[in-house]
Image (cartoon, chains in turn orange, yellow):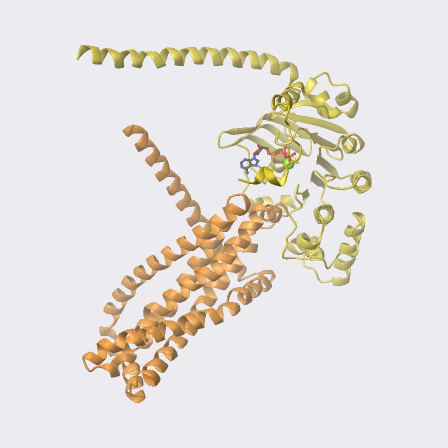
Length: 273
Length: 319
Ligand SMILES: Nc1ncnc2c1ncn2[C@@H]1O[C@H](COP(=O)(O)OP(=O)(O)OP(=O)(O)O)[C@@H](O)[C@H]1O
Ligand SMILES: [Mg+2]
């Protein structure tokens, strides 16, 4: 009994290990494929199409996400700060949170739902109707034809989408604070401007680069390895969303650590500039 | 205490005896099976230069399901080889190995004398341009229209500058399968048979040396089916294409096949000309080509009793 449970655990662990290995190899091939596509004009059109589908059409939902984040933060934080008589500092709090953490993460989660699901379903359907095999049978590399343009589009556009989310978050926070809660507008901005640095904004945007890459490659991987049938495609979509979400959170944590270390190292040197 | 020890001991011994017994029985059975197979198996020994495509001792398993069992086969250049066999016997799996879309669990595949089953996908891409593959379900790209589907392989391997020339190419290939005029349709607007014909046009777009057809006539009306047969014959006589045709349609098999191979339980049980197949002694072959139900299948139908209903009424589904 004990032995068989151990064996089951072992084989499960081995399988997970295998999957993780397969997935990393797939991601690696997707990234190198995107890089190679940069030097081949034949793929520009494909990448451009994907950028339209992935990027341009996500702008509205991303803006709505950002706006609500900013507005909600203003409402939640106001009472606490007003209690301490610090309501004019509301701007710093909202804008730092939006730009550094909430904007990038929630925008990425939104994208994982919006494009991750679509990518997985599209590629999964192509897999089960043998279209991916058909691409292979005609001597074309499906990674470069299907995966690389999507990964590239996500990599390039997620940072921009995050800037949109940030912008609307800042505006949402401003309107609620100033118009509804009656914070002094001049004080709000001057505190915000002194509290939020270019460094904070760049962190958010750099995060977007990684989030975009993770969402696209995980979703494509799930689509490429989905099981037969409508149920297989549905399950692949669910798995893709969950995996993207978890990796967004994990990447966010890891990058938080890394950026903090970088900041602490280079902060003293800033004086020299 | 002593009693309790004695019982497990017995239990420890019993499985071993059973195991040995089972082992002996399996040995005997496999011996018997081997003898039987020696009679029915028409697999021949092949060497890598025997044909344009050579499969040597191919075994394919999916997890524990054995689909191809030590199959050896040489496809002769310029000839049409037909593969027949009951549904689910591994015909599609066999034909996908010929272009290395599937890799064998063991064995070797050669194309023009060069081994291809161990090449990487990138190394294979050049070789695959010598092939045309018609998928059983068509596998048209549903984000592209008919014209773009047919131009896909062309655009992937050549730089298309002459657009009227490419239009002419599409028109010609579509006319060959009787689909000219459908250039701007998307696959979801086509019927099953129409999709198949467009897929066939795409498979021959690059004028490949070897064309692999997975059930080209299934789902077509008899006249269309015969036009496809004529097309296969014409491609062979005109440009000397090598074809491998998987089919259930015996009429088509006799018409286009220079050689017919029957697959059963992962083995080649018959291999020869149409005449050889028609007069084959193996009962499975006779049953298949004549489309007869075996006694066993009939027994199953009879077993389901006298009230075998062919129609259900709405009340049958009410609680
Ligand atoms: N990718 C796969 N994974 C697991 N099993 C598979 C796979 N492809 C095929 N099989 C199994 O291999 C067997 C043979 O399948 P195959 O598609 O070759 O049949 P077929 O002879 O083409 O049948 P049909 O005439 O109905 O098309 C089937 O039992 C199928 O379940
Ligand atoms: Mg088949």
